[in-house]
Length: 293
Image 1 (cartoon, rainbow, N blue to C red):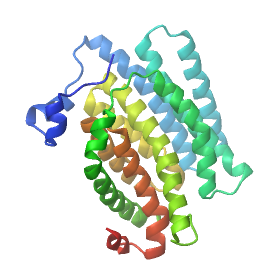
Image 2 (image 1 turned 90 degrees about the vertical axis):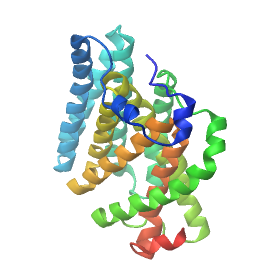
Image 3 (image 1 turned 60 degrees about the horizontal axis):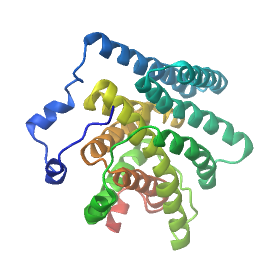
C-alpha cells in the first residue's frame, strides 16, 4: 500500500482546507477487525520501546539493553515468518529503533561522547536505514520541486531550527560540541548535524516510521505516534520536559513531511536545530542567536 498522495495543486497552495484537516483524522477505510489488527501490530512494538526507554530514563541501562535485544530478536523473527507484506514493512521500520539504541548504548564504552561519536553512531545505523528505505515504497517530493522551493525551505529551516533550539536549550542547557564558532568548527558541526544526524533521524522517523504508521493508523495517528517515539527516544537526556519538547518538535516536523513529502526540508530543520543547540547558542547565549538571521 502506498502512502497518501496529494494533488499538486494542494501541495503548492501551502494552506490547510477544512476537508484536508478532516482527512488527517479520518481512519483508513477498512473493516473494524482489520484496523484492530493493525493497531495491535503497531502498538506492541511501541509499548516495548516505551518500556525500554523508561528503563534508560531511570538509569537502568543493563535492563534496557536486555529489553531492546529481546525486541530486536522478536521483530527479526516476525519479519522472517510473516507473510503479510504490510506487517513486514512496519516491523522493518520498528527494527531500526532497537538497532539505534543498542549502538548508542555501547558507544560510550569505547570512546568519549563528543561530536565525532555522532558520526560513529549514526553512520553505523545509516546502512540499515537505507536498506529498510528501499523496501518501503515511500512517496516523496520530486527533486525538481525541491529545487524550485529551496529558496523557501532554506530560510524557513534556519528560522524553525533556531526557534526549536532556543526552546530545547532552556530545558536541557546543552553543552557545546565545538570549542568556538570559528568557520572551520562551525562547518564541521553543520556537516555532521545536517548530513549525518539529521539525515539518518529523518529517514527513520519521518520517511520510514511515519509513512508506515500513516497507512496503519491514518495521517494524524501516524504523525502523533512517530512523534511520540521521537520524543521517547530522547530519554537519555534524563528530563521529561525534554522528551515533551522533542515530541512537539516531532509533530511539527511530521506535519511538514506530511504536507510536502520533502525529506530535505525536515532534514535541514532537524540538522540546523542541532547546530544552534550544540554550537551557536551555548557560545552566544540564549536569545543571542537571533542576531544571526
